Length: 368
Image (cartoon, rainbow, N blue to C red; front, side, top):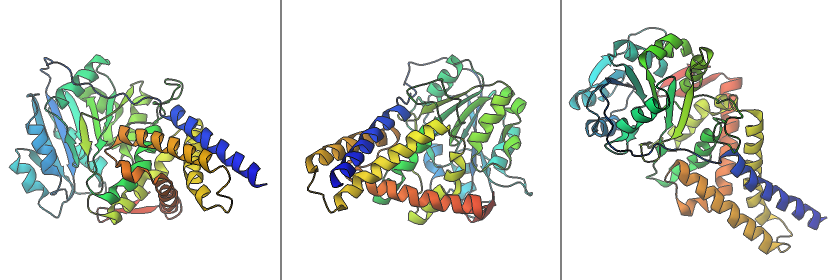
């Protein structure tokens, strides 16, 4: 009985490794290209609520850009700290979001777009940072090369400074995979949407699709905004941000990390294609089982086989982790722990978003 059970566990582990290649086959990134002659005015819209500790890094990286024809609008979403003062210090135009029942990021983005003057609109989260001086130029170049229509969405590369931040590894990988467009069967599945932290579009398309006003109640604005574009026949292009744009997620501690992923993850999973979800489930199961084996009473049976499988799974896990962030080699060795953390937090997200239909973020209760 023990031998048969071990064979089954071994097969699950192998299938999980295969599933990881099928679900995330390639993640295209924006290449650093030669100087590109661009004259179109770019409006950078930054929704911000209590971001005094992070927005300065973004604004400094914007000021260093070689792209010269742009304006920066910071939409202050009822901040209670020095966000507005910091933004003005770096030359941004600060706009106070109009008070009303409609609150949050989507509201700030919409009011920012109304105030913007540019032909192109770039929506950036306040905790992002442009990675080098050609980042804006390269993004606009890619957008225009791909037709200059619809959305160009770039998921920032996750930079790590503290150990607990590695708890986001599995979430970051699945967030990328869940877009449906990075599989081995590229083009077979319809894209799930756009990444929220960095979205580039043109003004005409944005207002034609209804913009963020069309997705006023969305928790994950990028997914719903992409859907609004799709309804009028406009495409969404998703790319990885390594070398172009990065961010440090949840720098204020574990509580912020837990609340941040709870806020959106279960809701976002409903946009992922069932086949991709099956691959994700297989990968997670393999990751957890890899850890369970070492606590079984018959660990002496097939020891070397499972050790090899564990190491193979680890190498693939680390490879995926480095595609999406600067995650630690050492921490990745204990990957079963991160899978267990993901499962527990995902269940928490299901409870708050599907049962209670309420989450808390940035001192606000958000009804879902």
